[in-house]
Every structure is written in C-alpha cells, then in structure tokens.
Amino acid sequence: MKNVVLIPGDGIGAEITNSVTTILEEAGAEINWIECSAGLKAYEETGNPLPEETIEALDEHRISLKGPLTTPVGSGFRSVNVALRQKFNLYSNIRPARTLPSIDSPFRGVDMVLFRENTQGLYIGKEEWIEEADNKKHAEAIAVVTEEASEKIIRAAFEYAVKNERKKVTLVHKANILKLTTGLFLEVGRKIAKEYKDIEFQDLIVDNMAMQMVLRPQQFDVVVTTNLFGDILSDLASGLVGGLGVTGAANIGDDAAMFEAVHGSAPDIVGKNVANPMALLFSSLMMLEHIDQKQIAENIRKAVYKTLVEKKVYCTPDIGGEGTTSTFTQAVCDNI
Ligand code: NAI
Ligand code: MG
Image (cartoon, rainbow, N blue to C red; front, side, top):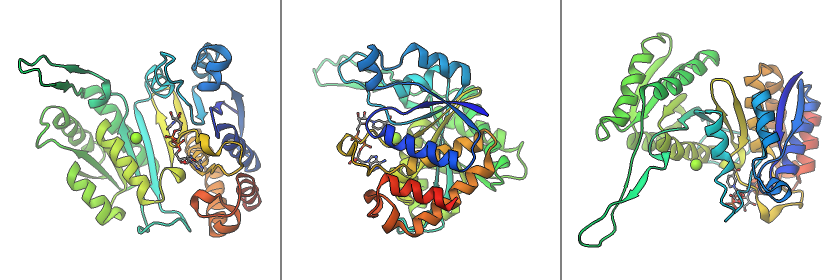
C-alpha cells in the first residue's frame, strides 16, 4: 500500500476525486488515501488556504493527487498551486498529449510528452517599473536560467524517454535571440544528449516548433523547454488532442510529486453530476506509473478508451456525451 495525499479541492473537486478514487479502487490500485484540505474551502474553515496539517502530510508522504483549487481573492494569500510547487521544488511540469478515441480533433496519431521547467525563466515574478523622463510607462522583466535547473529538467526528460521506451527528445529554445538564457538551456541540452546515445536529440526554435506542432504533431515524442515556452506549448499540445478537459498533468521534483488536473474548479457546474473526471483520471494514471503500478494504469487507460468508443451514452456533455459523472465512472469500472 502506498500512502498518497488526496486533496479534493474546490468546486467540482469532490465529484471528480470521488470518481477517480472509485475507478482506482476497482482496478486494484494499492493506495492508502490520506485526505487533506486546501483552497477556498480550507480557507473558509481554517483561515488558511494551505493548512499546516496539509503541508505536514505532503512533507511526510511526498506524493499527492490534487483537485482544482480556488485561490481566495483579496485574502492576501498567493496561489496555493504556486506555493506547493515552490515549497517542494517540483521543477518538472509534465504534460502528455495523446490522441484519444472519439474525441473531436483534426489531428490523429499524436503521442507526445512535454516537459516544462517549472521554477525559472520569465515566470519568477521579477518585474519592475522604470522611471522615464517623459512620464511614459516603462516596465521590465527579468528571466532566470541556471545550469543546475536546466540540467535537472533536461535530464528528467531524457530519463523519462529511457524509462518509457521513447525514441526522441526535442529541446525547444530561442537561442538565436535570447543568447544567454535560452542559449544556456540549449548548451546544457546538447551536453546531456551526448550521454544518451540511444535517444535521438533535436533542437528547434520555438516559433518553428509552434508551426511544426500544428503541421505534423506526430513527429514529436518527448519535448523539453523553458517555463514560458512550456506554458504555451503544453496548452497547444493539449489542444491537439481535445483540450484541457482530457489531458493530465504532473509536477515532479527530486523527492516529491503532485498530480493534478489542469482545469479549474468549474463553479458553473458544481453539484450537477456533469463534471468530467477524465483530466484528473489521466493525472492519476501518471501517478500510478510514478509509483510503479504501471500495469494498473494501463488497464484503466484501456477501460477509458473502451468507454470513449461509446462516448454518447456514457461520457459527460463537455466532450459531446449525454451521460453524467456517475455513468462515466460506472462504465469505466465495468470495462476494467
Ligand atoms: P475552469 O477550468 O474552472 O472552467 C472553465 C470552463 O470549463 C467552465 O465552463 C467549466 O464548467 C468547464 N470545465 C472545467 N473543468 C471541467 C470538467 N472537469 N468537466 C466539465 N467541464 C469543465 O476555469 P475558470 O472558470 O477560469 O476558473 C474557475 C476557478 O478555478 C477559479 O477560482 C480559478 O482560480 C480556479 N482555477 C484553478 C486551477 C487549479 O487549481 N489548477 C486552474 C485554473 C483555474
Ligand atoms: Mg498554462
């Protein structure tokens, strides 16, 4: 039994985590859930959107599955998601994008996994106003790229490729313009690639990458890039296979990992039994792979694909079904 911290979160969080834990149990996953609170509900109950007991549980057990959190507006608290990523140094944001049966998309045969550096780049929040004599506004931002952090994320991408029998790693950069920052990222990538002789290495400039992903996304396998490019390209990748409602996500560091859905708490559909648990379910499959319960993940994936073939009957309206959260959950359980 593996201890996993479960944070249902806000809005549709309870509905979708219920569905996911039901499916994992049906599939025989060996997990002991430790339920903790965070987000708006936690804030209303305890005055803190990230209660101390939750941090202690995460500290102790190191693996978590997290539903969407609503950051209380005007409370003075910063985003709980960002705080968790920083606290546990979850430097890789991993977003697979794989073509699904019966999901509308002009693209077929997509199967890529994008690694986004999660802690540096332009997203460190170092922005400032610059005084100008003419009183016109002037803002500047700083991007940070270090050799150490670049090595960590690029190595994580290569290690993933080896472990999952992937053939190619594509590093995305803009080293022709941002010569020092993304230039360093590229330099580190070229160095690390030499250690992995069986994996093909390719580097692409980000604008070309954007075009290639839309022209022929099937050419990509594992992709690794800096924070800002990764933010944009990972949503693009999700868009190729049906959007944020059907793609999972993981935040992984050296000694902690948090698996989460990328969508929000969907306040407009709370309690209506129409929330789609699929994104969180795919995140939980990444978790099962991470904790070496790969076969169980594979069995669930097959059951979901089988369910998708009869999408209209069993799946939720957001992906064109006429079913509910419950009918989807039951159908996946029946198909396992
Ligand atoms: P949202 O993702 O919650 O909703 C956008 C639209 O997508 C809504 O129409 C919603 O009904 C639909 N939707 C989202 N997830 C769905 C699902 N699983 N099944 C069916 N339909 C789904 O984004 P929004 O409205 O911008 O944000 C709402 C709240 O969520 C905000 O408080 C925001 O801060 C929070 N949020 C949290 C995130 C996280 O914890 N990772 C990420 C994004 C937003
Ligand atoms: Mg994003």
